[in-house]
Length: 339
Image 1 (cartoon, rainbow, N blue to C red):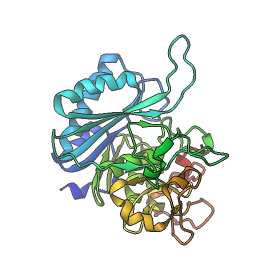
Image 2: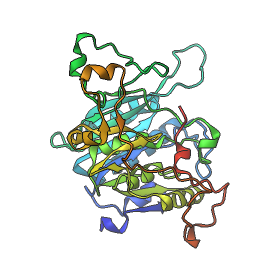
Image 3: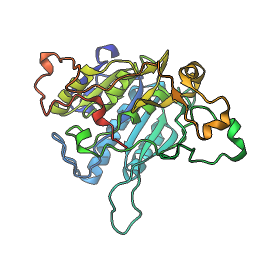
Image 4: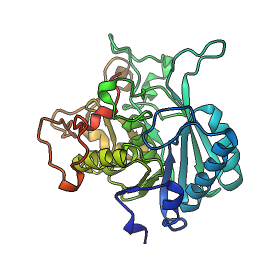
C-alpha cells in the first residue's frame, strides 16, 4: 500500500494525508514545520496562539512516529525554543539519540545571547536496533594556505585521509541566504543538510517522508541519493515548484557503488563504512602526515554529477507541470548557499 504514495508530492493538509500512510512503513521522517514566527507562507498563517500551535505540533509528531519503521529515525528541525517542546512530546513515544546543533548565525536580537544555531532533534522509533551509519566530512583547512585548522600534534600519522567523523555540531553547512539561490519560500534548507541526514539513517530505496515538503528539498535529496520520497504540501504553488525541480533530478549522487553528498564538485559527506570502496577514487598523500598540507582530491577521471542550469540541457517537464513559471528556476543548486 505504501508504494501507492512513494515518489510523489501530495497536496493537502498533513494530518489528513497521514491517515493514508500505514503504520511503521517509512524508514525516515523529517519535519521542518512552520516556526510560528509570522513568516510569509502562501497558504498558511504562521501566527497561532501558543497552545493551539503546540497542540497541532503534538498531532503531527505523533503521526511521524506512528509511520516510522521500528529501525527507523525521526528528525525535527526548528529553533531551540520549539525543540524543547517537541522533545517533551517525543520523550513519551520515542527514544532520544542526539540534538544536532547546526551553526547558522542570524541577525542580532537585542539584549540577549545572539542566536547562532538551529537544532535538529534525532529520535529513534525503538530503543535498540536503529539503523545508523557513521559519517565523515572533509578536513577543515585554512582557505589561503590549505593547512589543517586543527593541530593534531604528534598524532598526524593517525589522520584519516578523507576527514574526521561527523559530530553533533555542524559548522560546514551554511544557510541559504542569497535571494538568487532561493525559491519563493520563506524557509528553505540547504539540500546537502538533508543529504547528510538521509545518508546517516537510510539505505538505497529506503522511504523518506516529509510532512512539510515546501519546495521539495527533502524529496530532491532523497531522489538524487537513490531513495524513495513522500512529500506532503499544503500549497499548490510550492508543490508545482517541487515537481518541476524533481523532474530534473537523477539518482546519480554516487561514486562507484557508494552514495555520497556533493557540494561544489566535491564530496562533503560519505559513510565511514564505504571508505574502503571509495579511497581508490582519490589521490591520497603517500604518508598520513602530509595531509596536514596536502588535500585529498578526487582523481581527474572520476565522473561526478554536473550542475543543472535553466539555459543548458534542460529536460522539458510534462505539460501537467507547466503552470509554474516564476522565472522558471530549475537549477537544483539554487537551494545551496555560496559559502
